Length: 396
Image: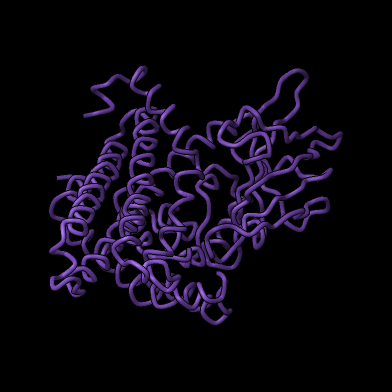
């Protein structure tokens, strides 16, 4: 039995230990800080942040998919998703404080890995990913940011990026830009130091969730970068971004499953122990049926997530995995929003308090239907995959 298959039945001892380690970390370190973060509007004090980072490193839960030689864990997809599922049980994005880095660094040069990836996985700095623009969201073909070659072999970047997650705290920004080569535009990723001349934050808007870091609008005005700052080669930006999107969408699906699990656990406990009209809440069909629907959603979503893990680890067609990742993100993000709404309703007035986990998830899960490609974009990808990969492949 493969690791991925066992995740859907009896976990191996090693997988069970990893799952329990992640669950205990979330229960003992992250969840107790949720209300504190909510009351503070998101950011936590430095001493809490230090403890999160230190304990994450001690528990071996940081940098999961990155190579151990770079400071990561070298997990399989199944191992990573088991941990992401547990992180999804935490509100307020507190797990964002844990040392991590984007997957595109795997394609970077040894120099860039030493300069940015290794310190990131030690918790010494953070990276950010700048893709979205005012007129280019999920469609990278609309990106207007450009990079012109200079006489010394480097580049000059110009453009504006929106929703740059971690942009307010990052030491390095991974920027998607089109290298101008005559009439051609070559999508390329650049590692841009956040303190480079010409890099600025022009807006840092508040968002619905109370998370640790912002998603600012960043301006790149005549920013000089070296040829050595290209990640993965000129013209490889689309391929690297597709790899990033696929991974992010699977991760979002897994975290949505974890969120549903916590919502169902806490709401069921409330419904069992709360009496209304001479009976327990759970004895009323208006309460028990929504819980049953949420349980079915969570179970179905989990099967989708670990089916993708099995496919990925078996060496399946990356294009098929891309289509299935979109399908999993679509289903799990929509299902998690339904689950949160049901939980708020079951908790009643208490469900509308920000100290209640259902209320926080109700706000926080909404963005999972938007970022890394909206639900509408996922539907387009799934529909095209049905045509190109075949119905049997997408549904088997």
